[in-house]
Image (cartoon, rainbow, N blue to C red; front, side, top):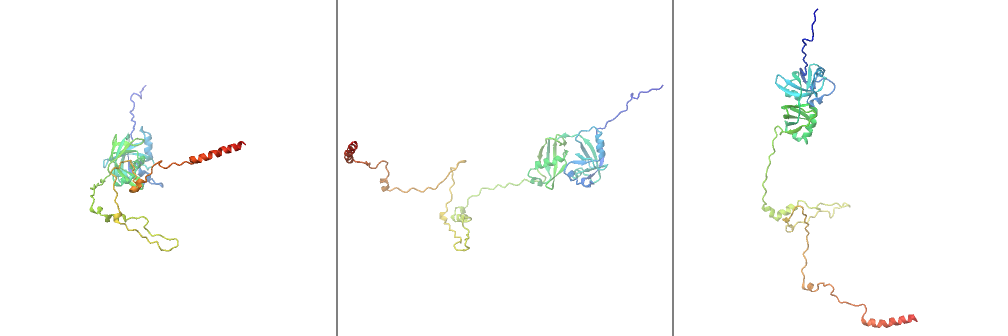
Length: 323
């Protein structure tokens, strides 16, 4: 009787946990369908076939799904995320700027591999045109555009759309690695000087010395005659034009007085200067007629003689009232 143990030599099993395959890549404009997929051009994600989703679901991969794209002919590579799994079998659709970074043409072969990337903490961008400086708040615009990206790779030239204009920015530096994930991260963003940007030259003008013309009173009249209030012509309600001709009074150069600066001015102090009239000179008559308080002659209402005459009359009236 023959017997054997099938578990003495177990068969080796290998669990593949990495996705790697080749696709023919096309730009998003080649994607067939009634819907406009211009949103793919505004980000850093690709469209893959449904078979890729079936294969990825069988693998032990981490989420979110991030991929490394490699063009073996030019030895160029970049990283991206996936947007949808609706492409035809054997085909993937890439944004146009991503195909330019990989030096790929329509229908070229690209190697797609699943990767795990570290979370970004810092990135530095260099605008490829000085027109990027026309944006009022470039950090806010870049932050809004990076919401459609999944990862960044040092050396890539990404394209963002703002106000119906496309701006290209080169990724100069990323930390903590050359390829980082920017999904749900707190990343510091910095900008380098745009390509072709030149600092404006600063011209320092020497203080001008006063000329002889400034001290000439004739030049003062020319300066003051530039604007004079209420010198225009008027209109009458009855329509007549009599007495409405402007008659500006000529200015005598001797009447113009140049202001004298207040050399005692202090910051935070307001000085009100009033033109006071000079007091008239005092004469000898004015000095004699000066006012002296309580210097008049005192007068009584009743004199002593009047009082002597009134007292007998008062006593007679009292006696008459008693009778």
